[in-house]
Each structure stands twice: as C-alpha cells, then as structure tokens.
Length: 379
Image (tube, rainbow, N blue to C red; front, side, top):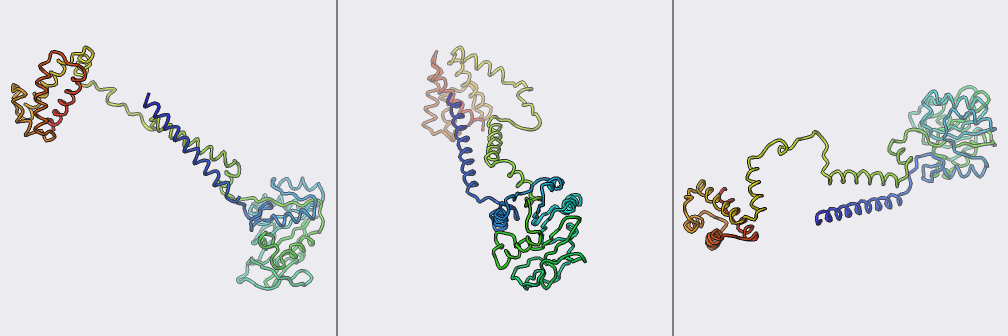
C-alpha cells in the first residue's frame, strides 16, 4: 500500500511539473511579438505593408487581399476594373503560374509588379548595373524626387514602353501593355514598406505610380505573401499554439508513462530464470517448510552446522570442535568483529542451540548473525 501510494504521489508531481512548464512556456510565447513575413498587407512590422494597405482602403471602398490560386484571377476580372498589387512575389519563376497572370492582364486588368530583381518575370527584363547610382529620381515629366533606390538593376525599355521613373542608371518603373491590360513594373519594393514609405519622397512616387496605373478601379487586390516559408513556420501557422503545447505534453507524458511501466522496445530476451531449473530449489522448499511449521530450532541448528562446514573448508577448523573452542580462531580471522563481539556470538549461539524451542524473533536475529559470519568466512 505504501509503495502504491508513493507511486501515485510521484505521478502527481510529474504531471503537475509538466503542466507548470507548459503554462510558463505558453505565457512566455504569448508575450512574444507576432512574427510576420516581409511585404505582407497586414504586417505592422517595418518590412510590412500595413500603412500602404490602410491608405489604399481610405481611397477605395473595395480593397481586399488575394490568397487564392492565380488561375482564378481571370474569373474575378468579371467584377470590373481591377488593380492587382504584387510586392516581392517569389512564385513567378513557374511558367504556368506566370501564364495565369499574363492572361489576367490581357483580359483588361492592371498589375503593379514591384520586385527588386525583375529578371525574366512577366517579360519585364532587366539590365544589371556594375555600380549603384545615387541621385535624383525623375518621373515621366522630368520632375526630380529624392528617393533611395536599393536595387542594382534597371529595367530594359522596349519600343512601346512608357518610362514612368528613372535615374542616371536607367529605368526604375515602366508601363507596358499586353492585350487590353497593363503591367507596371517597379524595382523598388522598399518604398512601399512601413519603414520607408514616409521617408524622403517615397510616398509621392508611390502615389504617382498609382495614377499612372489608371487612377480609379472597381476593386484593388493585394496579393498575400506566397512562396517559400519553411515547413515549421507553416505548421505553426496552421495550428494554434495551445494545441502544439498540448501535443508536446501528451508526447512527454506518454514517454514517461512507458518508462515507469518498464516498457522496453527491441527484441524479446527470455530471462534465464524462465528456462533454467536452479539447484537450490530443494533448499528453498525445505526453508519454506521449516518456516511454515515453525521449526525454528531445527532450522537454526542446520545453519550453524553449515557454518561449521564452511569454516572447515576455508579455514581448516575441525567440524567437531565446539563453538567455545573456536573462539580464538574467530578472534584472529573475523576482521569485522571485535573480541567482545566474538565472545558474545559464541556464548549466545551455544545457549540458543541448547534450547528445545525458540521464537521467530530469536530465529531471525541469530540467522542474521550466522549469515554475517558466513559471508566473512567465504571471502
């Protein structure tokens, strides 16, 4: 009963500790600021677009984020004139996906594509500069603006293109027609972020691009961040944090439960006790019989005779010697007993062996002492 109670108490301590650790971990994680991918419309971080997205909501009553498959864009184009804003997309390298966007433009819609490196994306080829140009940015009318151009590439202008923004290095933004629609390509995504949109003349430049794109639309779509988030981030985005903590708790609890139950994994090893018959089974049976019949005197006499036999075999003391005659030998050879203890052992053993009956307490006491001496003899 005591061991079972102790086991239950240990389990309560373990479960309580795990619950406490889970709660502390949950509170610690809940205090952490939420991490956002860069260039996402709902991100208030410096690299996010929430300021620009909120401003566009004030200009147009129908502003939404787009996170569906690109193949559905053409179906949505039936709702009127649309502007799709794509900032630093990382999924346009796929030719099939790019074809969907081209079909969307050719159906009469407008895409504002903003990416630092536009090489080969939606046919907006670029020229790579060996040096970065620092200077004023000019619009199509030659008006100068102060802005940071972080990209080392400039757009390759074709015959029918309209250059919207440029600097000494070349075109920064251009407008190109495909079918009934328009593509506006820009290589400065940093202008649109929360951190930089109010720096220098970035906001007037962004608003000028929107005017060049057409000015008014029935609907404005911000494409949500696509692409290569790692598996762990995607997994934590799918499931609430409390489910993750609970799952980890269940896993740890299961491992501990298997451990305490003694479960082992691997090949089955048959214990030797299951296949081998021990030679001392008869001795065990006799011992059990003596205890059951309370024949303590006979059992103690057998132990004393066995000790004599071991003394004769190991120390050469004759079996026929009495316990009194063995006193001097025992004093010399028993390192763990003093002379006084040896005398008490010899005298007491002789007395108890002469009794016709002894009780269980005497039997256990002298059995323990005889066994202790036997271990020293057998060293």
